[in-house]
Length: 317
Image (tube, rainbow, N blue to C red):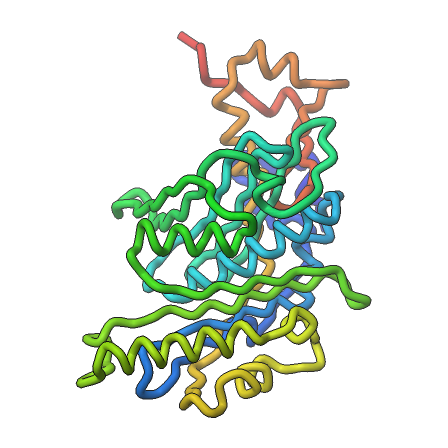
């Protein structure tokens, strides 16, 4: 089989063959749930071996890998709450040693992401130390024929969970609880997100007094706060079992699980389209020994193009 990252007889613009990346699918990665008679809904996201497939391809410092894993699990959990066709993304840009963090998930569960450390940096610490000052953006992109929704907030808080809570409070006026975990285990990288949202009375909690709803929400978040990181990342403990431990006395109702898969969507055709935007002189400068190499930041694969098969467009008369 032809290696899709290397030149072939098929013109680059027409070669959509998928590159050699893991065919990893987690059929029960997202488990939605709600608490009956209480103003609480949520999602438990556990990436399992998909976390290793996504994170392990990148040679990143440990703290940056942890941040990337948290972002991947969080993005999948937030996307699962929406009804959309397209992609939902989390993007953080800052002036710290990791100036770019990006994760996105499609409506069908294709997940991908990357973190880009600054050249020469030795990033360590929590999200605030890695990202520095900047902004956090959540974007729902449903294609060129639909309006794109985007919420942007300044980076505020020490952890990615803190930053997400700030976004919910300031941009969505929504009470939420977010707990994220990512570590390298003996089985490889694992990442988990537990997300609770408080739903309004008109969402189905009829006749419930404000004080009673407040107490139900407070109880749910206290219980969620008792979960240990080792529980969240333990492959031997199923998502159903973990949710039962936390909420079995609170009217737990589990909904249909959703799958997540390795979702890099790169191809020679996509990257060739990018190259066509460069002037011929820039393409000449990029070429080494007659070939241009472009790296996909999501899957960390290098695609090679014969200089002769790429024709630039920018700057031409």
